[in-house]
Amino acid sequence: MIDKKVRDAMNEQVKHELESFYIYMSMVAYFHSQNLDGMAHWMRCQAHEEMIHAMKFFDHIIDRGGAVKLLDLKQIKTVWKKPLEAWHDAYEHEKFITAKINNLTKISREQNDYTSEPLLSWFLNEQIEEEKNTEKVFRELSMVETSKEGVLMLDRELAARAFPAGSPVNPLAYNAVA
Ligand code: OFO
Image 1 (spheres, rainbow, N blue to C red):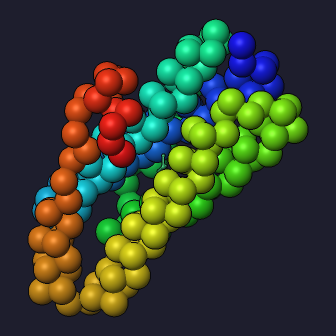
Image 2: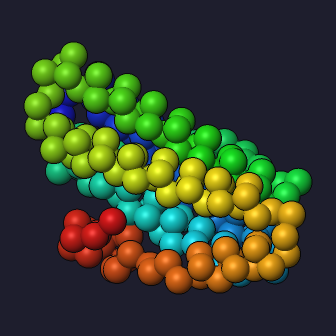
């Protein structure tokens, strides 16, 4: 049976991961509006991953006899002054999520909830990747943003990202990927 404090913190984390999904889908729409279909594609893959992250916590709560409670999502930004601002926000958002995972790990240790350790270790590692990926694109776009050719080249490169396999709501599929 999952500890109540850990369960509540994980329910909060389901919300944060769904907000990540929502924020990145908002960026998908924005990048399409700027004719940056490669960036839109990259963010679409990212949003898919975020739904998988939400479901990992969702199913962990259920598997341990807890109740999942879906909380209100906050109103998110729908427009950015320029693409670089969106990538800056994505990087900042990933740092915010890292802080949330760190806090969740702290709570689970305080409650001696060793059963959640493998899941939280997976997320601690994942956040290294999440920050690295968004920071890299932010840095590269800062270098080329005044050159149309440079922006287009980066957009083409981002179009090559592969979608995680499987459906984000199918645990058999998502446990193997992302
Ligand atoms: Fe779920 O890692 Fe990004 O937000």
